[in-house]
Image 1 (cartoon, helix red, strand yellow):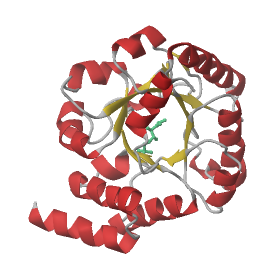
Image 2 (image 1 turned 45 degrees about the vertical axis):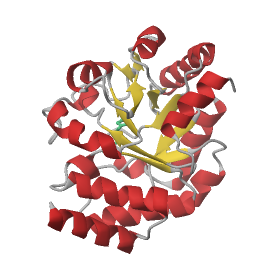
Image 3 (image 1 turned 180 degrees about the vertical axis):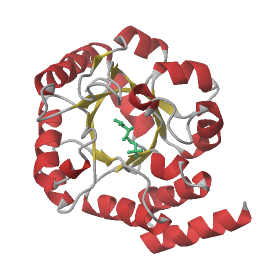
Length: 262
Ligand code: 5RP
Protein backbone atom coordinates (compact mmCIF):
# COMPACT_ATOMS: atom_id res chain seq x y z
CA UNK A 1 0.00 0.00 0.00
CA UNK A 2 1.35 3.40 -0.96
CA UNK A 3 2.08 6.15 1.60
CA UNK A 4 -0.96 8.26 0.67
CA UNK A 5 -3.44 5.45 1.17
CA UNK A 6 -1.78 4.40 4.44
CA UNK A 7 -1.83 7.97 5.68
CA UNK A 8 -5.50 8.41 4.75
CA UNK A 9 -6.39 5.20 6.60
CA UNK A 10 -4.45 6.49 9.60
CA UNK A 11 -6.70 9.57 9.61
CA UNK A 12 -9.60 7.19 10.25
CA UNK A 13 -8.15 4.22 12.15
CA UNK A 14 -6.17 5.66 15.03
CA UNK A 15 -2.84 4.41 16.46
CA UNK A 16 -4.66 1.92 18.72
CA UNK A 17 -6.12 0.30 15.60
CA UNK A 18 -9.64 1.51 16.48
CA UNK A 19 -12.07 4.11 15.20
CA UNK A 20 -15.23 5.99 16.13
CA UNK A 21 -16.91 7.18 12.95
CA UNK A 22 -20.01 9.35 13.03
CA UNK A 23 -22.49 8.44 10.26
CA UNK A 24 -24.67 11.32 9.06
CA UNK A 25 -25.25 10.26 5.46
CA UNK A 26 -28.85 9.08 5.95
CA UNK A 27 -30.39 12.00 4.03
CA UNK A 28 -29.01 10.78 0.69
CA UNK A 29 -31.86 8.28 0.44
CA UNK A 30 -34.27 9.14 3.26
CA UNK A 31 -34.37 12.94 3.18
CA UNK A 32 -34.55 15.07 6.34
CA UNK A 33 -34.19 12.26 8.86
CA UNK A 34 -35.33 12.94 12.44
CA UNK A 35 -32.70 14.99 14.30
CA UNK A 36 -30.58 15.71 11.22
CA UNK A 37 -33.20 17.89 9.54
CA UNK A 38 -30.67 20.68 10.12
CA UNK A 39 -27.37 18.84 9.59
CA UNK A 40 -25.07 21.65 10.74
CA UNK A 41 -26.84 22.02 14.08
CA UNK A 42 -26.61 18.30 14.83
CA UNK A 43 -23.21 17.46 13.42
CA UNK A 44 -20.96 20.35 14.47
CA UNK A 45 -21.13 19.82 18.26
CA UNK A 46 -20.29 16.11 17.75
CA UNK A 47 -17.36 16.51 15.36
CA UNK A 48 -14.66 16.94 18.05
CA UNK A 49 -15.56 13.51 19.42
CA UNK A 50 -15.52 11.62 16.11
CA UNK A 51 -12.38 10.23 14.47
CA UNK A 52 -14.17 10.52 11.13
CA UNK A 53 -17.51 11.73 9.83
CA UNK A 54 -19.33 9.91 7.03
CA UNK A 55 -21.48 12.15 4.85
CA UNK A 56 -22.29 13.27 1.32
CA UNK A 57 -20.57 16.10 -0.53
CA UNK A 58 -23.78 18.17 -0.31
CA UNK A 59 -23.87 18.15 3.47
CA UNK A 60 -20.10 18.51 3.71
CA UNK A 61 -20.02 21.66 1.56
CA UNK A 62 -23.16 23.21 3.02
CA UNK A 63 -22.92 22.32 6.68
CA UNK A 64 -19.37 21.54 7.84
CA UNK A 65 -16.65 24.08 8.51
CA UNK A 66 -13.42 23.65 6.53
CA UNK A 67 -11.61 24.20 9.86
CA UNK A 68 -12.59 20.77 11.16
CA UNK A 69 -9.86 18.34 12.19
CA UNK A 70 -12.21 15.38 11.84
CA UNK A 71 -11.46 13.10 8.88
CA UNK A 72 -13.92 12.93 6.04
CA UNK A 73 -15.43 9.68 4.78
CA UNK A 74 -17.31 10.68 1.67
CA UNK A 75 -20.45 8.73 0.72
CA UNK A 76 -20.14 8.40 -3.07
CA UNK A 77 -22.96 5.96 -3.87
CA UNK A 78 -26.61 6.88 -4.20
CA UNK A 79 -29.23 7.72 -6.79
CA UNK A 80 -31.93 5.84 -4.84
CA UNK A 81 -34.60 6.84 -2.32
CA UNK A 82 -36.75 5.41 0.43
CA UNK A 83 -39.84 5.75 -1.81
CA UNK A 84 -38.18 4.18 -4.87
CA UNK A 85 -35.96 1.15 -5.34
CA UNK A 86 -33.71 1.29 -2.33
CA UNK A 87 -30.98 -0.99 -3.70
CA UNK A 88 -30.64 0.78 -7.04
CA UNK A 89 -27.43 2.69 -6.27
CA UNK A 90 -24.59 3.76 -8.48
CA UNK A 91 -21.51 5.93 -8.05
CA UNK A 92 -22.74 9.53 -7.83
CA UNK A 93 -19.57 11.43 -6.93
CA UNK A 94 -16.31 11.48 -8.91
CA UNK A 95 -12.95 10.61 -7.45
CA UNK A 96 -11.82 14.12 -8.49
CA UNK A 97 -14.43 15.66 -6.22
CA UNK A 98 -13.46 13.31 -3.38
CA UNK A 99 -9.87 14.56 -3.73
CA UNK A 100 -11.03 18.20 -3.87
CA UNK A 101 -12.91 17.57 -0.63
CA UNK A 102 -9.84 16.04 1.00
CA UNK A 103 -11.67 12.77 1.69
CA UNK A 104 -9.72 10.26 3.75
CA UNK A 105 -11.91 7.49 2.32
CA UNK A 106 -14.87 7.00 0.01
CA UNK A 107 -17.89 4.87 0.91
CA UNK A 108 -20.28 2.82 -1.19
CA UNK A 109 -23.17 0.50 -0.35
CA UNK A 110 -23.53 -3.00 -1.77
CA UNK A 111 -26.85 -4.85 -1.92
CA UNK A 112 -26.03 -8.57 -2.05
CA UNK A 113 -28.98 -10.82 -2.89
CA UNK A 114 -31.06 -8.08 -4.54
CA UNK A 115 -31.69 -7.48 -8.23
CA UNK A 116 -29.01 -4.77 -7.98
CA UNK A 117 -26.33 -7.10 -6.57
CA UNK A 118 -24.24 -7.17 -9.76
CA UNK A 119 -24.57 -3.42 -10.34
CA UNK A 120 -23.55 -2.44 -6.81
CA UNK A 121 -20.71 -4.99 -6.64
CA UNK A 122 -19.22 -3.88 -9.97
CA UNK A 123 -19.51 -0.26 -8.78
CA UNK A 124 -17.52 -1.26 -5.68
CA UNK A 125 -14.84 -2.90 -7.82
CA UNK A 126 -14.66 0.16 -10.11
CA UNK A 127 -14.38 2.46 -7.12
CA UNK A 128 -11.55 0.37 -5.67
CA UNK A 129 -9.69 0.66 -9.01
CA UNK A 130 -10.14 4.44 -9.01
CA UNK A 131 -9.23 4.64 -5.33
CA UNK A 132 -6.03 2.69 -5.98
CA UNK A 133 -5.08 5.13 -8.76
CA UNK A 134 -5.21 8.05 -6.31
CA UNK A 135 -4.46 6.40 -2.97
CA UNK A 136 -8.00 6.69 -1.57
CA UNK A 137 -9.28 3.77 0.55
CA UNK A 138 -12.80 2.47 -0.07
CA UNK A 139 -15.29 1.59 2.66
CA UNK A 140 -17.97 -0.90 1.59
CA UNK A 141 -21.30 -0.80 3.43
CA UNK A 142 -23.23 -4.08 3.50
CA UNK A 143 -26.66 -2.49 3.15
CA UNK A 144 -29.84 -4.35 4.10
CA UNK A 145 -32.36 -1.71 3.03
CA UNK A 146 -35.69 -2.14 4.78
CA UNK A 147 -35.06 -5.85 5.37
CA UNK A 148 -33.56 -5.55 8.85
CA UNK A 149 -34.05 -9.28 9.39
CA UNK A 150 -31.15 -9.82 6.99
CA UNK A 151 -28.86 -8.87 9.88
CA UNK A 152 -27.75 -12.44 10.56
CA UNK A 153 -24.30 -14.01 10.49
CA UNK A 154 -24.54 -16.19 7.38
CA UNK A 155 -25.78 -13.36 5.16
CA UNK A 156 -23.50 -10.67 6.61
CA UNK A 157 -20.45 -12.96 6.45
CA UNK A 158 -21.19 -13.48 2.75
CA UNK A 159 -21.52 -9.73 2.10
CA UNK A 160 -18.45 -8.76 4.13
CA UNK A 161 -16.26 -11.39 2.51
CA UNK A 162 -17.35 -10.36 -0.98
CA UNK A 163 -16.64 -6.69 -0.15
CA UNK A 164 -13.16 -7.61 1.11
CA UNK A 165 -12.45 -9.80 -1.92
CA UNK A 166 -13.40 -6.93 -4.25
CA UNK A 167 -10.83 -4.73 -2.52
CA UNK A 168 -12.59 -2.70 0.18
CA UNK A 169 -10.12 -1.41 2.79
CA UNK A 170 -12.76 -1.34 5.54
CA UNK A 171 -16.16 -3.04 5.64
CA UNK A 172 -19.12 -1.56 7.48
CA UNK A 173 -21.75 -4.03 8.56
CA UNK A 174 -24.25 -4.81 11.32
CA UNK A 175 -23.63 -6.57 14.60
CA UNK A 176 -25.49 -9.86 14.85
CA UNK A 177 -25.58 -13.09 16.81
CA UNK A 178 -22.42 -15.15 16.07
CA UNK A 179 -20.67 -11.97 14.92
CA UNK A 180 -17.27 -13.67 15.34
CA UNK A 181 -18.16 -15.74 12.24
CA UNK A 182 -18.55 -12.49 10.29
CA UNK A 183 -15.23 -11.18 11.64
CA UNK A 184 -13.34 -14.43 11.02
CA UNK A 185 -14.46 -14.58 7.39
CA UNK A 186 -13.49 -11.01 6.61
CA UNK A 187 -9.76 -10.36 6.08
CA UNK A 188 -10.08 -6.55 6.36
CA UNK A 189 -11.15 -4.40 9.34
CA UNK A 190 -14.85 -4.28 10.20
CA UNK A 191 -16.87 -1.46 11.74
CA UNK A 192 -20.50 -1.69 12.77
CA UNK A 193 -23.50 0.52 12.08
CA UNK A 194 -25.92 1.10 14.91
CA UNK A 195 -29.19 0.61 13.04
CA UNK A 196 -32.47 2.16 14.21
CA UNK A 197 -32.56 3.81 17.65
CA UNK A 198 -32.32 1.23 20.42
CA UNK A 199 -34.56 1.33 23.48
CA UNK A 200 -31.98 2.21 26.13
CA UNK A 201 -28.47 3.64 26.32
CA UNK A 202 -27.32 0.40 27.92
CA UNK A 203 -28.45 -1.39 24.73
CA UNK A 204 -26.15 0.90 22.71
CA UNK A 205 -23.15 0.31 24.94
CA UNK A 206 -23.74 -3.46 25.05
CA UNK A 207 -23.90 -3.48 21.24
CA UNK A 208 -20.64 -1.57 20.90
CA UNK A 209 -18.88 -3.62 23.58
CA UNK A 210 -19.98 -6.95 22.07
CA UNK A 211 -18.90 -5.89 18.58
CA UNK A 212 -15.45 -4.79 19.74
CA UNK A 213 -15.11 -7.91 21.88
CA UNK A 214 -15.87 -10.04 18.82
CA UNK A 215 -13.20 -8.27 16.74
CA UNK A 216 -14.73 -5.17 15.15
CA UNK A 217 -12.28 -2.24 15.09
CA UNK A 218 -14.94 0.32 15.86
CA UNK A 219 -18.22 1.85 14.89
CA UNK A 220 -19.68 3.97 12.13
CA UNK A 221 -22.83 4.99 13.96
CA UNK A 222 -25.54 7.51 13.41
CA UNK A 223 -29.07 7.37 14.84
CA UNK A 224 -28.16 5.89 18.20
CA UNK A 225 -25.89 8.89 18.75
CA UNK A 226 -27.70 11.89 17.29
CA UNK A 227 -31.28 10.77 17.92
CA UNK A 228 -30.45 10.51 21.63
CA UNK A 229 -31.31 13.54 23.79
CA UNK A 230 -27.69 13.55 25.02
CA UNK A 231 -25.63 12.84 21.89
CA UNK A 232 -22.31 14.15 23.27
CA UNK A 233 -22.63 11.93 26.33
CA UNK A 234 -23.40 8.92 24.09
CA UNK A 235 -20.49 9.45 21.70
CA UNK A 236 -18.04 10.04 24.56
CA UNK A 237 -19.23 6.84 26.24
CA UNK A 238 -18.85 4.94 22.96
CA UNK A 239 -15.32 6.32 22.65
CA UNK A 240 -14.50 4.95 26.09
CA UNK A 241 -15.39 1.43 24.93
CA UNK A 242 -13.67 1.69 21.56
CA UNK A 243 -10.49 3.54 22.58
CA UNK A 244 -10.16 2.84 26.31
CA UNK A 245 -11.50 -0.72 26.55
CA UNK A 246 -14.26 0.33 28.95
CA UNK A 247 -17.01 -2.18 29.67
CA UNK A 248 -20.61 -1.40 28.72
CA UNK A 249 -21.36 -0.69 32.39
CA UNK A 250 -18.40 1.69 32.71
CA UNK A 251 -19.53 3.44 29.52
CA UNK A 252 -23.03 3.82 30.94
CA UNK A 253 -21.65 5.32 34.15
CA UNK A 254 -19.62 7.79 32.07
CA UNK A 255 -22.74 8.59 30.02
CA UNK A 256 -24.70 9.38 33.20
CA UNK A 257 -21.90 11.51 34.59
CA UNK A 258 -21.62 13.61 31.42
CA UNK A 259 -25.41 13.83 30.99
CA UNK A 260 -25.90 15.02 34.58
CA UNK A 261 -23.18 17.67 34.24
CA UNK A 262 -24.53 19.11 30.99
C1 5RP B 1 -26.84 4.00 5.35
C2 5RP B 1 -25.61 4.04 6.13
C3 5RP B 1 -25.63 4.68 7.47
O1 5RP B 1 -24.52 5.49 7.57
C4 5RP B 1 -25.61 3.59 8.49
O2 5RP B 1 -26.84 2.94 8.50
C5 5RP B 1 -25.12 4.02 9.87
O3 5RP B 1 -26.05 4.67 10.56
P1 5RP B 1 -26.92 4.05 11.72
O4 5RP B 1 -25.97 3.82 12.89
O5 5RP B 1 -27.93 5.11 11.98
O6 5RP B 1 -27.51 2.73 11.25
O7 5RP B 1 -24.58 3.60 5.71
O8 5RP B 1 -26.70 3.10 4.30
